[in-house]
Amino acid sequence: MLQNRRLFLWNVTRAGCLVLAQPGLASAAARTLEDDANAASIPLRTRPFAGISPGQERVVEGIPLCWCPPGRFLMGSPPAEHGHRPDEAQVEVSLTRGFWAGKFEVTQAQWKRIVGEYPDRLPSSRFGEGDDFPVYWINFQAAEKFCANVTQRARGSRELPADWEFRLPTEAQWEYACRAGTVTATSFGAGLSLREANYSGEWQRADRNDPRPGSARKVGSYPANAWGIHDMHGNVWEWCRDWYHPRLPGGTDPDLYDVVGIPNRDGTYSRVRRGGAWIEDGWACRSACRLRYEPPRRSDHIGFRVVAVQL
Image 1: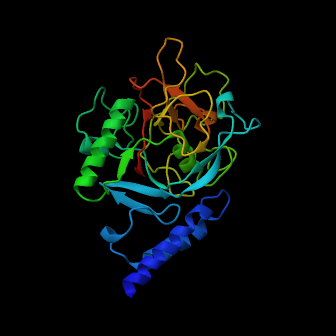
Image 2 (image 1 turned 90 degrees about the vertical axis):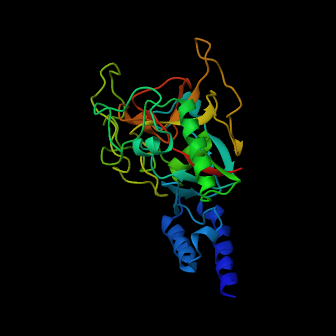
Image 3 (image 1 turned 180 degrees about the horizontal axis):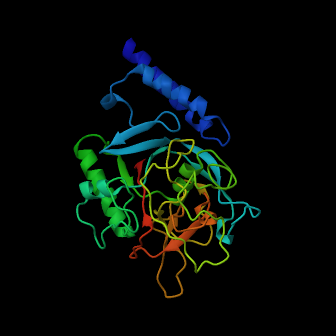
């Protein structure tokens, strides 16, 4: 009877996820559901792998994760938003399955533990060096290798079910996790301060050829959004799995991993990067901002974040 009651609690709280995912609802309600689930005290190995409430946390293969429940949201930005770009025209998106998003950007310590050697240049004190700093100088293929290695290890330890895997987020998943129910330019409001994110400190510099000195900071150095996820604005750009298209993908569970977009001027094609970086102005750190980047390339201010999704 006790076990049946515990499972009932999990089923009842799961049913609330779609409602809680809607913009503007208080995170306190989500925390209440999480408390109810914790009260059930179901052993971790016997719990359903999917989460219950927004921001619920779980650690898999040493990687802290936060639950992003199924839901609908408006992806992109309105024309009046300061910094709006033409490729951010808003579309409605429905995500029918929840997913786990990395609480932090992948760190240098995690890279060394999961992959080992760096594929190209080593992190340095100039751009941020240390176990708790985000990894960078990582191209798209190397980021995917990390995801594949984590998936294999986590399935081997039985921390990850066979029908789940780690991967880079789609653009829709990334923006949904970044917004965490908000509709403003950033998850903190209409603007961004240096207390909230690691970026240049200006919203839009007049002279882009005069870069400010700076570097990455330790992950988690700035406040989390409403779902407990840190550094979605600034620090380092983050790879997404989608090919770059000039129009945002709307609809149900959009995923442009296999749909090649428009070519660049030199004939190459680009994936998408999101979130801005320490070197960027505030406009580039907005929830809706999206820039292209060729998959083979690496940079001192581009890293990544993982998600765990059900197949």
